[in-house]
Structures are given as C-alpha cells and as structure tokens.
Image (cartoon, rainbow over all chains, first blue to last red; front, side, top):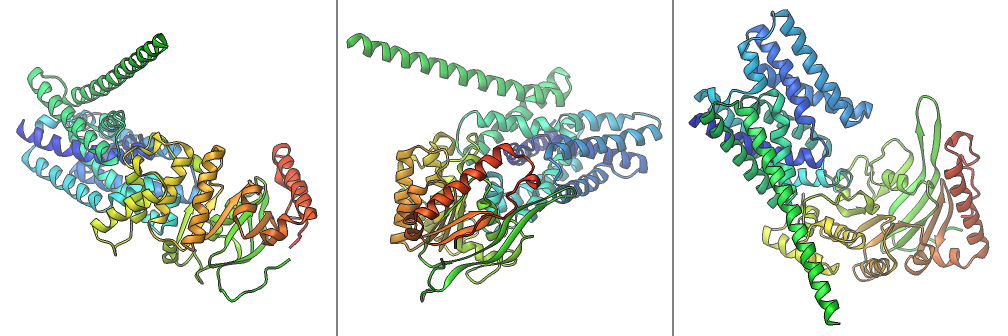
Length: 276
Length: 275
C-alpha cells in the first residue's frame, strides 16, 4: 500500500505536467496511442520472455520518434497519426497473444493496472523515471511552452523546434510506460488529460494551471488507491472515476458561480433601474 | 520606378525570389521573380490582395519555407542556414491563431520573448518584461489571461513579446485584421513610435491603403509579381498606379472566389509590372 501511494503520487505528478503540454497542443489522444503501442511492446516482452516494461519502453520510444518523422515527411494530420499508432500497437499485441495461446494474468495486470501489487524495485524505477522526466521538463519548460503557444513564432525566434518535438515525444513515451503499472494501458490517457482540463476550468495562468493540475492528479490517485484498498475495487478504474468526479464537481461549481454572479448583476441592475 | 540607392546599407535583400506550390497533378505560382531591398530605419508597407503571396514572401524571408528560387539575405545572412540572425528579427502574424483557452497570463506570454536570452539576470528580465508591457499600455492587464483580452490588446501583447528581445527588424503580417478602428489607430501610433523613436525597421503587410499611406515611407505592391516598389508618396500620388492596383486587386479578388483551380486562371504570375 505504501509503495502504491508513493509511486502513484510520483506518476500522477509527471502525468499532469506532461499532459498539460499534450492537451494544449491538441494531442490529448497521444497518450492513448502510446499506451496501445506499449501494449504491443508488452506482448513482445511476454512472448520473448524479456521484462515487458523494457520492451514496451523501447517499442514506444521508437514508435514515437518514427511517427514524428513520418508526420514530417508525409504531412499526415495528427489525429490520423494517432489512429495509425493505436491500431498498429494493438494489432502487434493481439497477434502475439494469439501465438502464445491467449491472455495471461500478467497481460491482464498490464491492461488494467496493478498498483497495489507494486514491488519496491518497481517503485524505485517509477520514481527514478518520473524524476528524470520532471528534471528535463523543468530545464526546457519555457521552450516547450513557447512551441505549444505558437510553433511558428518559436521557430522564428531561433528555437530548434524539431529537436524539442522529438525530446517531448520521448518524455511523453517514458511517462506513459511508467504509468502502465498504475492504471493500465487502457486508462492512461485519463491521467494525462482529466487533471489538466479540470485545472483549465479555473482560468489561471500557465504555472498556476500546472500546479492545480498536479494537485488534482495527486489527489485523484492517492484517494483512488486508498478507496480501492479499503473497498477492494479495481484501483485503475477507481482513480479515473475520482478524477472524472473532480472534473464534474469543478464544472458544476463554476456554472453555479456564474449563475450566482449573473443573478447578482441582474439584481444590481434592477435596483439601479428602480432608483431611476 | 526604383528607389535611389542611399548611403545606408540594405538590411534585407530579396533577389529574384519565386515560389510555387507543386504536387503530382498541378503547380501553382505564388511568387514570381520578386526583388526588393529594405534599408535600416525604413517602414515598408507591403500591399496586395488576398492570395497575392504576402504571407508566403514572409515565410520565405524567415526561412520557414526553404524551397524557393532566388536569394534572400537579412543582415547579410541566409535565414535558411543561419538561425542566429533570427534573434534580430521579430515576426508577428495575423491575430487569429491565438487560442483563447490557452492558460497563460500577459506576463507569461511576454516572457516567452526572453527564451534563449542568457545575457540578462532573472531580476533584469523581470524588470524588462514589466517595462515592455508598460510601453504597449497593458500594465494593468499583466496578470490577465491572454484569452480575456480584446483582439487589439492581444496584438499589443505579441508586440511586447517581440520587443523584449530588442529586435532590429519587425515583420508584421496583416496584424490588424479583424480589429476595430480605434484599436487599429492606437496600434498604428505604437508602430510609428517604434520606427521613429527606436529606429526599428518595419516591414508590414496590410490591406489598409490609408494606413500605409500615413505610416510607410516605402511601398511594395505585390500580386504574385512585384507590381510596384518605391517611395510611398510616388505610389499614392500617382492616380494611374492606384487605379491599376485597384483593378488588379479586384481581378485577383474575383479569381480567388470564382476560380478554385489556379491552373485554369489567367493569373499565373503574368500581372503588369509598374516598378
């Protein structure tokens, strides 16, 4: 449980930060695509008896670089590239599973997450990878923010946008691989997207949005793990449902505030009219 | 009508630049043999109808498009090869690219202009950010999100971001499109002061002939070809030129709307030239 909470906090933090750039660049489904590629990589690992996270890591990073290069040459739209990645990863996984006579318990845990069963070795690996991603992002975050705001302007200011894009897809791939243990292949994009769209509802600047997103992400993961531990529910699904609940609560409170403010303004207007 | 060569050296030299969009089935000429020079302190207004190739010309000048014919040097360097020269240039394009949901304050957007500038300390950078925001009249909006500002205010934020790196050349691509008249007037006053007081060379594309007449000392009029290049007063005081430009612009406007296939048009870079 303690291992799960520590790993979960680290993973949710890095997912929120990487996810903010993905959401703002309209690449919200990139995480989904990478996780499906990782699924293919995991299947390769299970098939070849190599530690699946490493094969997933290698396959995902190569696929992320490959798809970025392919997009440069062919100019295919981002959503089509995502569809290509997603179906390719899944196809490789399904074929290899059929060759190894169907689903195994290991594969099930990769699909849906197994954070409560995380070992101390996995915890240390997760923390090290999260720390590495966060350190690199903290070094280049203003450059990443610039290319996210306006890639053309960033190019004209002399930034090497091509290299930064490659660096970012590699960081995003590492983030996805690290998160597989937490929520599984099928729910990863929720960790990248939901805390950020929740944070954006607050209407703050970049740094504050990133901070709120990190808080929402960490809160969802820690409360999700605790609730699933106590109630024996699936942790991945519980975490996602809590983050969706947080998002809906934020939307509802924002809408209520707008209604109260609107009524208040109408009341003031009518009082002024009555006086006149 | 060529500009007389003065003592000041040209900081922008565009020589015989042509650009076409090609695919397997067709080819479309966007720029045909464009040449002009811009000297330090010039305020060049580039006018031309929609589809005349103004944005493409800027993209070639900035090295964003690399496969053009001809030569372009800015401060003596080819921007396709030397990225360092871009540090001296600020580029502001049409305002409609700004995502109103982007979660960044005015302060944060302006600070992007300091990315890559290592010479300044953190405190000096912050002071400079505030002073440049003040210079474009947005000090009280510095903590507002860019999406909360009007179109004109957003353009001023982008100007502030551009100015923070102390550019020697400012390139603006139709910066006032979709902005109301009073905001446009304030924006033009700002451009004028940047050119006159800070001696920043400005290249500015616009459809607003009145504003170009008031602000620019040089005019380049393009419609795929260079239609006219010279002193602004020579263009605006020549009724024949103005009439020919209006007819050419109207023709291009009609073709843009009526003819979706550029190959079947008569406008394959064969407009009359008056320079």
